[in-house]
Image 1: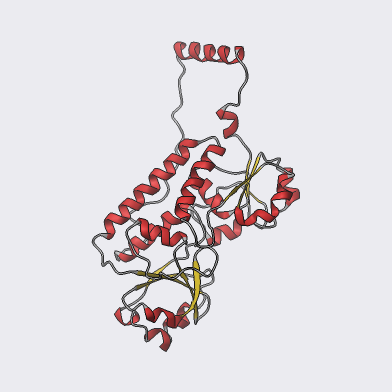
Image 2: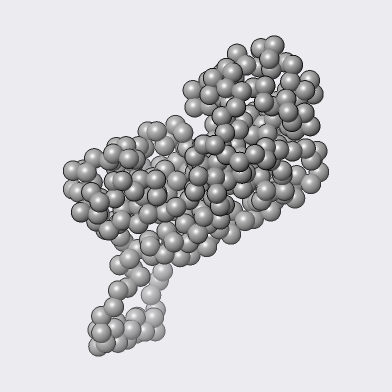
Amino acid sequence: MSDFGEYPSVTAPKRWAPTRRSLFLALSSMAMAYAGPLSAAPVEQSRRRIISLNWALSETLYAMGIEPIGAAEITGYERMVGFPPTPPGIIDLGFQNNPNLELLSSLNPDLILIQSWQAAGRPALERLAPVESFALYNRGKGDPLEASREAVKRLAELCGDPAAGFSLLSRTDQIFADCAKRLLTTERRPILLVQALSPTNLVVFTGGSLFDSALRRIGLVNAWSKPPTLLWGSTQIGVDALAAYPQARIVWIASPDGAGSEDLFGSDLWRQLPQATRGPVLKLPLIWGFGALPTAERFARLITCGLMGKTG
């Protein structure tokens, strides 16, 4: 457990005991409502049957305490993302890019959520329910963290709970501020943020990635200044490319299958890196690099704890 804690649990509200005055006011309000024209009530919107076909949107909903009736690839989400966890009772609708349309239709959804990279499937989905699409990443351009913040606001409005969005944004801003303050006491070396593809090939996260945005938000510098070559802000490199940044600190994010790390760290190629002579690399657990605000928050907490020599 880190110093920053986990998402707060939701406690049941205290039971309300009606008074004679409150009952009178409630009945008066109801009479006024029936006397005037009907309008869409926030309560009706909050009960919308939401489908999330995207992990980044799912994690955002869960972090706000909003539960869709169905979501895509729940098992994969739990393995690759895992935080916040999927609430019980949500129906797995299959692949993000190829959901089970028959099952989805049977749930009679009011709204389907996708990300922009899923646009090819939108026409089929729109035959079942209205579709809302979110653009969090733009091939390494823009700021995914800011796009994720806007997604929080928009999702909260669509789900009829703006307060939940405000709460998530406030909590995340506070965590970023706490991380930045704590890191003022640590060594301020630029960061090379890498993940293994194989024993000799890595992915380095660049500008335009969620991780790069989070690094900047907590006062750290990404040593890799070249533009990305891969979607979502990353570049495939060989291990030897790290030698061009001798003053940088390597931060290693675990791969989903643990690919390459043990073989690499024991290799002559790795031991010859100038960074390796300074001591062991900082290792972080698997963090999904293509998420939204909850992923950025978790990354900030974990790298802060790691750089301060604590366990997150």
